[in-house]
Length: 249
Image (cartoon, rainbow, N blue to C red; front, side, top):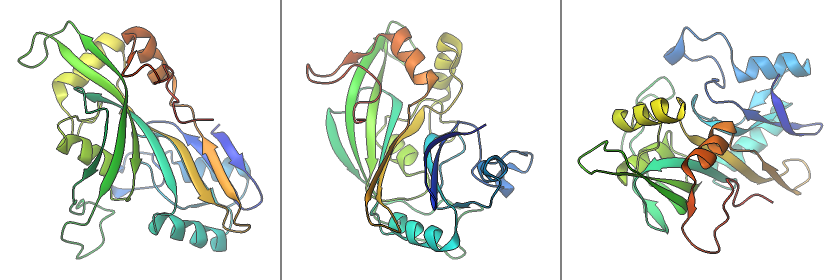
């Protein structure tokens, strides 16, 4: 059963687990379980997804319960009026904070619009929460560095966070497309983590019917908590929190 984080007469927000597709896709023809189908069966009514999370990404995922609400909320996402906050584990130690302003080409897959070409403006704000240095050689250095970062995409390009962090040379651990296999294997073998370490932990938007602010928070998941214990994350500043939900109420 899917965990429901928020529900009213027109909206429902779930905590999507890593590894679950939002809806049927020709990219993963073998998959038989989808968030749309599972939530429809759980609620006993039709649901309308208004945005996407990648299959490997976990966290807050919003659905509408009628077409009018779906259109209104999808418009907020398209017009970049929804604030989304993510956490991720990345290779290396990024700067304490910054903005990745790097245009992105459309990902040419089943989701790309026909004839969609040319790089589009893409911006992601980030903040480094905690760091760790492991006494393990993975690349050419005798130790390996990793960080826990908080991410806020200002735009909503496909795979934006994964591509932006790879562009910054700090790819997300567990990313088999844009990441580094040697580091992914280290986390799988040493920590038992075999998922993409990216989670949407907060959504903020205006209710499509009332205009009232809606803030929904999601736990990053047991893998993040387990890593915090195993790696003894060190906060990057005295004021930085040591848990994995720094921006949650």
